[in-house]
Length: 295
Image 1 (cartoon, one colour):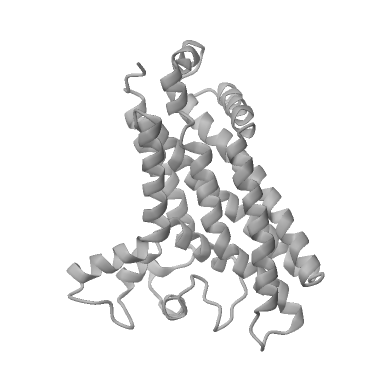
Image 2: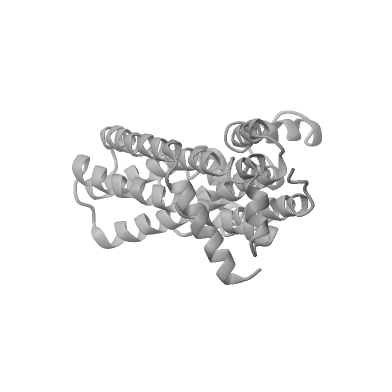
């Protein structure tokens, strides 16, 4: 791959995607949800929290919802990126220019990720404004570190899902299959992952999940991208720690993971999990796409 051609491909795809009405519609919904969530959280903080900590509590709650919204936004932005050009015939024209298939695939991943970064930036600006309006001006130094850290980590999560969406788009043969595949990917990684791990434990662990499950079971639950996202945020100390606010929405499970000395449950391993989702998905897609019939 040539760096210059990769940049040209990424810029072309960014220009194409940034004009998508669907992407901006979802980004607008994202901003409205952030306003509503921030307001609700400002009214429902634990009573033992000091006033100065309330902005950080609101940032905690918003981070939990952001992982859902950004995953949807990323999948929508990327699912048709390759297949639409294959079906229209423009992919053959594109490859007739001095572009290799790897450059097209990686360029689209980078271009769509840049679009998601713009949408996430708009959402985080809305978060900051909402906190100032509904809660008040936070302690700037500490808040800025957590705010910017969560922003860049959220962009990383968006990059993971964008890469997976573009990979799906490169593997399938129709837009309909691409859409169904990203819907399935969303429900597997966001909605049913915990149920899947419980199903695994039912067969390999000898029954229902106990109150203190083994480390390997907790490791499986943290392999989902959204769980890895909150674990990585905890590793960087971007989220407020409090007994009533678990980093992954399950207080008992979060507490056990924090107390365990196992490498499998290390919070820093979450960064590797996020990177592996993107790298393995991209490599699998390229392995199929490089020999695919573009007719």
